[in-house]
Length: 265
Length: 107
Image 1 (cartoon, rainbow over the protein chains, first blue to last red):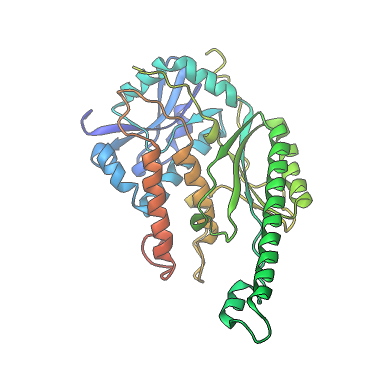
Image 2: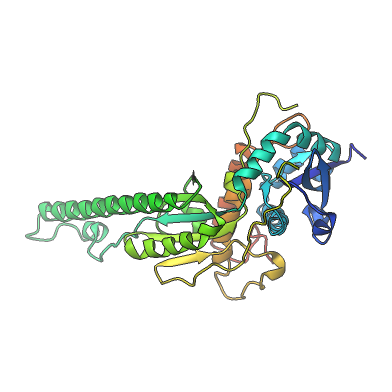
């Protein structure tokens, strides 16, 4: 049994009731149950190592359909528990040898986990993405000019002048957008208990033509959440040079940090 | 114990708190599959889902706590994020000429 199954972990919390978890379907279509130890609880699902061992997992992660379904399941379980209690989400695909191993982890890292839970107590994560302004290419842009070739009586100097003007306007726009992004980030940071700058997302994945300038995560006190989202709205109005996207509320994925000792066990 | 189980509930309202002016787009985290209406049969059904999936993967793959130790079996590390994002990028590319094709994970 212990050879065949591992324990997929979703989240750690101070306490979880079995009946919070029973109604849910976890990874692999299997049930979710709590593991209790040292006054902490972890939500886990028993998964077949044949499919969720390290090597099979690596292969599965390259299957986008599997990844999407699994990420959604993982997130849904975390979000459902987050409605009941504060928690520390586990990264996707964290699998332990057994429930006993999960219990050992809870006991070994008890103080760190309690400290991490205290940091996210009564706080919510919000995501804010800022996109650079879209390029406004006119019909008579450089490409069109180059394709047309030098017109009679219009030497290359005219083209170069036009090109320089365009580049300079583009640089000005970029500088203004950077200043806007900086201003927005500072203003939002003042309303947040903690801030994490994430790597900007690949334009191929965002589906947006504009490059992402900032991908911020903000941990906001619950009583400040209204002020925060209102601030995002008014900052968007004040900075028309950039486009802002707000996501959330999220469980505290970006703020679930525990100091790593050299060897945990 | 020691306050860890006092259970201050995190609010998890589904809807975003404002409808927003045109300048701003509020994107909620992806709804659970049970709440998800079937994708419309028209073309480009996945854009909104795709954006939300990106935000989700951004968090579940790069966020969340990683607790090392011998008991942990899988390695939830940066490599994994790279592998998965490569898979995602190639699926987006593959999906361009065939919006309903394989790799999208949708029927």
